[in-house]
Amino acid sequence: MARSGRALGKVLAERLTAPHRSVLRHLASCGILMSRIPPMQASVTNHTFARRTFFNIASPFGNKRKEYSERRIIGYSMQEMYEVVAVVEDYKLFVPWCKKSDILSKRSGYCKAHLEIGFPPVLEKYTSVVTLVRPHLVKASCTDGKLFNHLETVWRFGPGIPGYPRTCTLDFSVSFEFRSLLHSQLATLFFDEVVKQMVAAFERRASKLYGPETSIPRELMFHEIHHT
Image 1 (cartoon, one colour):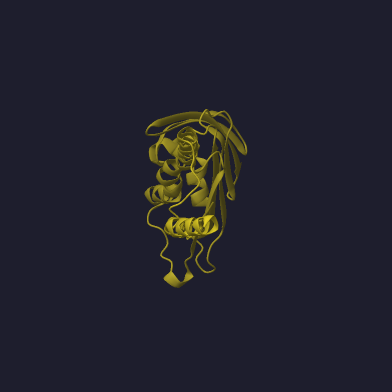
Image 2: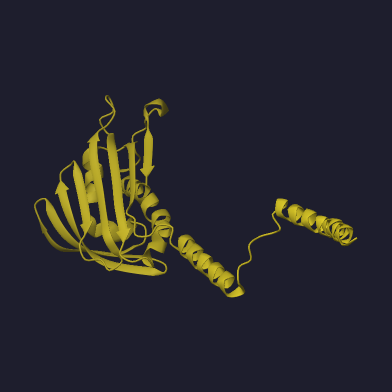
């Protein structure tokens, strides 16, 4: 009698717990049943993730050096384009966002200039050391800027299209790196407002000084742009 009572109790217990086990299996299969995280630990985890995400979004460039280069055929001679780029004291008249360009010292193949670039909300003053190789090269390096850890522009002028003497191949490159993480947020602004417009600004200056550029057949023209 006692054995039959215990057996009956066991059967009833299994029937009562079976639906509960089925529900647990269903919840687990749906991904609803999870290991519980104490409230304090969960809040710390979420806070850490949010902070990390903020810095990843706010500083996509970090202090990484940015580089841009452009190569194209220009309807002006090597000498004409060299004269436009080499006369640094005239930059304030036509270079995008250039407020001042004063020569501090000058000798054959070299000059030192004080430049001031203002693109809202930043105003940068620095000394530029310029290397000149007529009519092939103009290279300018920033030496004491507060905003830039590195800023260098290089202009190279080579022969143009055979049969078109008043043309040249222009190679322009610029590399820059901001000093601080905060200033590096300006990389996109500086890139779009200053760097991308540079060659066009010097070409317009050549047009003002030397007249319309040489007409070049479309099939002979090329224009390459690279940036990192």
